[in-house]
Structure formats: C-alpha cells, structure tokens
Image 1 (cartoon, rainbow, N blue to C red):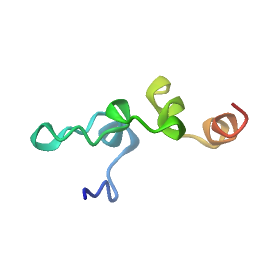
Image 2 (image 1 turned 180 degrees about the vertical axis):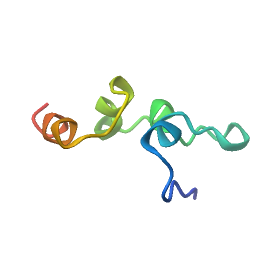
Image 3 (image 1 turned 60 degrees about the vertical axis):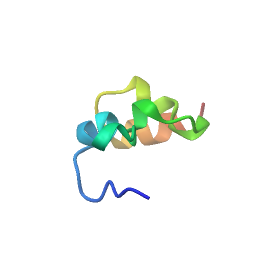
Amino acid sequence: MHSLGNKSFGDKKIMNKDDGEQGYIYSNLWLNTYLKTIDQWTITNLGERYTI
C-alpha cells in the first residue's frame, strides 16, 4: 500500500513511485475520474466532484 500523505494535489495526481502508478491519473476507481481532469483541488472542485 502506498501513502500520498501531505503531498500537494499536483504531486498526488502524477505520483508514479517505482512505476507503481499510484497517482490519480493512473487510478481505475470511478471516484478518481474527476481528479484526472482538474489541475488543483478547491472547495468548488469538491462540490463539482459530488454532483457528477
């Protein structure tokens, strides 16, 4: 299991430690689909994520 910890949203989005593909852009979870399309995590984005 990997830990994203306190990394920035941008780092979490593209994280690829040892080709393990842990970042949001590599995720197959439907909940992370929206995270692949944004560049920053804001209160507005939070609301939009849950209305999709």
